[in-house]
Amino acid sequence: MLDQGAGPHTPKIPTGRHGGASRLTRRKPVEMLLAEGGHGGGGELRRSLGLWQLTMISIGATLGTGIFVVLGQAVPDAGPAVVVSFVIAGLTALFSALSYAELAGTIPVAGSSYSYAYATMGELVAWVCGWCLLLEYGVSVAAVAVGWGQYIDELLHATLGLNLPQALSAPPGEGGLFNVPALLVVLLAMAFLLGGARESARANTVMVIVKVLALLLFCAVAAAGVRAGNYQPFMPLGMAGVSAAGATLFFSYIGFDAASTAGEEAKDPQRDLPRAILLSLVLVTALYCLVAAVAVGAMPWQRFEGGEAALSGILREVTGQDFWPAVLAFGAVVAIASVVLTVLYGQTRILFAMSRDGLVPAVFSRVDPRSGTPRANTVIVSAFCATLAAAVPLGGLADATSIGTLFAFGLVNVAVIVLRRTRPGMRRSFRVPLSPLLPLAGLGLCLWMMLSLDAVTWAVFGVWMAVGAVVYFGYGMRRSRLKTAPDPASTEE
Image 1: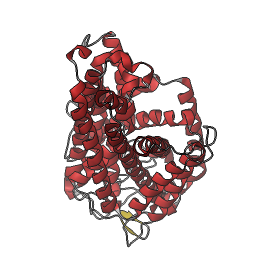
Image 2: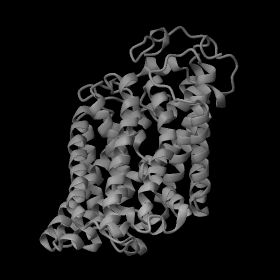
Image 3: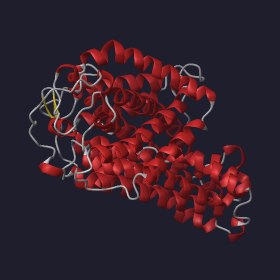
Image 4: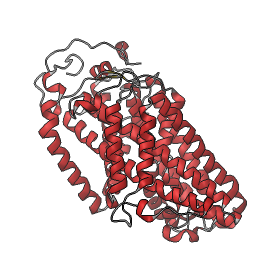
């Protein structure tokens, strides 16, 4: 709970003059964010998600294609010590996760880091953060959906000996005409989301359980092929190789912040959101480490060269059968569908918050009174992502999601420090320990990883930011609700 009884249903407090702050730095008071919680045009979002569902949302968005393909890229750098690399990557993600946990419990609203930035650093920074999130969520949905068709093809080949026609399983420019599986998985996720947050959470929970069981099954079957000699030497390329692999693996943890976008649909957000974020990160890290340990024990690390070895290949070598690889392919199909569902959910809720603030058109914050969901928002976003996945060759654009994510993570770490200084008396259901040292460490790690990305990624990011500036100064700044609405001055000045 917040101080002075603030909570999701707190009525709007009296307002005063803004105090002459610049349009670009005007902040949205925490009390205003909380008072608006759940409200949209035409209805309200429904509070129906508990700790279990929120944790499953974070796991669903995090545990996806990464673990099914990433070992082939990371093991050549780290050798058997790739397990340590997973721990390093998990600890790196933990710094930002702690900051997310504090802010999600203190400001439990749909906008996630966009709203946190609005309350602490002002409208322009919030817009930049929200624009980065649109890149992160929107493009990643499309990119993950493209991969779904590849696993569908693998599953069909392993079970029926069939393959999808190339023309219907890849976009133009990549050997096909139209990626039908990518279109279908996005539309399937849209159908669940339109049914309501509770129904979507139930479907996601089932999918998360299936993919966790698939990975545990991999460990149980592949354990028969584990040889102690495969772990020697444990760190053949030294600590430098372990660190390089850790940087690569960090992006397997992106998605833990998805629960924070459900702040206005959680039953007890101030208690459950911090727990869900941290619990999901711990569980995902433990599962990653277990799978990696079994994988490098069952196959010599030198065999992972070239990035071609996958978990299904290890199962095929250990068992000499196609049955277990087919089971794992089914788990991968479910895993990707779960990622598409949860990330698409996060995208719609961030747009909902931005629309409610007037920075994007009002259609994105209209809530259907029957289902309690932003229906038009969901349909528009799903149609865009489905078209992007099915008909546009993404290429290097998908890599740009990483830089947008790191930028948003960095802002969240800054927001924790700013809110501690501007609102020190505010009650927090969770507090980042050793603040501001840990948030500063989280910020530093995010900046370090951003600087390690290539020039092409930075160029794409620059173009995206330039487009965002045009949209903001041409539309958002002029239509912002804070342009005319006075702010509660007593707590912000």
